[in-house]
Length: 371
Ligand SMILES: Nc1ncnc2c1ncn2[C@@H]1O[C@H](COP(=O)(O)OP(=O)(O)O)[C@@H](O)[C@H]1O
Ligand SMILES: [Mg+2]
Image (cartoon, rainbow, N blue to C red; front, side, top):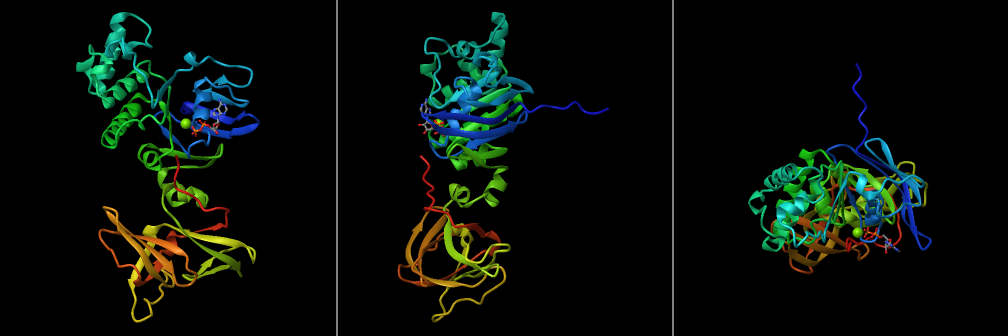
């Protein structure tokens, strides 16, 4: 016997949407399995909410298709209305109905007999730890509690898909982690496919089974958080998750020569401008021994000298900025705990060669600032 083929909960293919002649969603394709959480991650304005709105059915795509559990729900001719798509929605500025009790809020979208609706509302409120509030009114609850009620309400009709647009950004940091974890547990139990939009890489890393990294209307990379972080598709994908250092070089004889020694650049034509990119935590620091540094090693390559420009304690690590001797370029290093060398001190830097990426040179400097 062959196992029945299971369709993805959600499958979107080649979605396109333009406003005023500009493509804000440009051929976006995604599929989400039951119980899977995919985070659509990208800077503000890259088209995340527009993508979500098309899936929800409140925005119409110019082209492309949307399937739920293998059934077409929308193309450019055929369109299932939003309320019949079995999609739950949760947004940052979720609004509970102020004149309805907590229980009535959760039961609002449910059909059927009053007792069944009330039982389902109770089950979900119990699951988010708020059953005792069932007869209270929203204004009697804290922000975090209201958020959990909104989640219970969205999940009450057992949607096959949950779309969440920056749902946690209105909560303060201390509340957020707990609510994220609880939300994730509940979503997994319910077996919905989840598409969560966020511009925060930390949130995506925490929540996602898969991250779809979006930029200027396109998905530039998809993969597990570990893959996206450790095998970035390009420099800007890398810069989105952390500070980066960039050392420029020109390919010669399949090598890129740098102050940190040569890097292999197989198959790259002579004269190609390259960037060697690495994160501050992969920079090693060593002492100056009367003008010379440590010996080169295979793992760390050749050391290069820099002068401390600034050193700051960041809590769990220290961040040190160097002005490099070879060309005055600034590089950053982080080390665990406290290391605060004085400004002007010469130190030697090495980079973990297995943590360096070589990309073709890109235009302007990336910025980690995203909103
Ligand atoms: N209804 C609209 N009319 C015109 N432009 C829009 C409309 N909705 C979104 N946009 C534009 O489309 C781009 C993407 O918006 P959006 O999907 O909200 O981005 P994100 O959610 O990633 O921040 C933005 O430049 C935004 O100004
Ligand atoms: Mg948005």
